[in-house]
Amino acid sequence: MSACVSNTLRLPASFQPKYDSKIVTSLKTAAVSGVLFQVSDSVFRDVPVRQVELCRTTEAPTWSTTFVNFLELMDRNPQYYNKFYIVDFKRGDKPRAEINKDIDGLASLSIVYSKRENREKITAMTNLPCAETVAPYLGKELITTSIDWPSIEQINAALKAAPNKLKIDRFQFNTDFLVYLAERQTILKINPEVAFERTYQGGIF
Image (tube, rainbow, N blue to C red; front, side, top):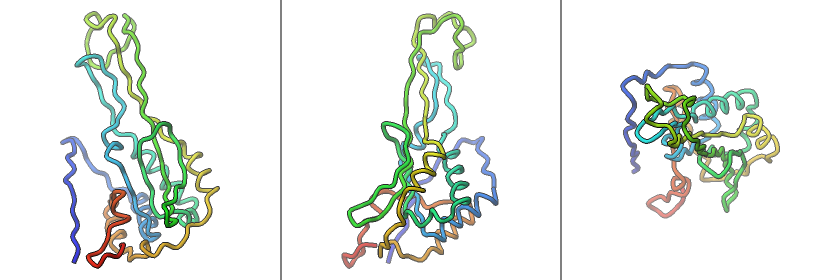
């Protein structure tokens, strides 16, 4: 007996999901290949921001563009699905793409972004994020937070150089559920513990 637990994602009222048949096809290819996606919570929280005191503007998350670009790269190079079992989107000290292996040889593609801040003194020529006049903020500090992802060329280079993945028994599973989700333009978001989850008999999934 097993259970599936999920958390409800709260989206802005203005959010309108769009069905994209091309993305669905790409997700189904990944699903049939048995690829899982590991996405850290910081990926959703870290967004480009400009602020001074309570005056603040926030842009949309940037990871979705990298995700779509990744799928397009895989469509052009389906042989790359033989290189890894998991795609891991996470934050690090610098943007990079690399293949990592667990102690049993499980290969993961890490796509790592970095978060950086730029601080500048506000002048009469500064374009403020949300205030109508600059006068009350002159001399104060404007903080701009940027999110940097590795380029698609970096991801391609990491995959091109990687050897084919080893056969890992715990990752030989039926992909029907992944395909079911892909057909609905959805992915199964896992966490690092899932790959080592144990069955009630003590074995590893």
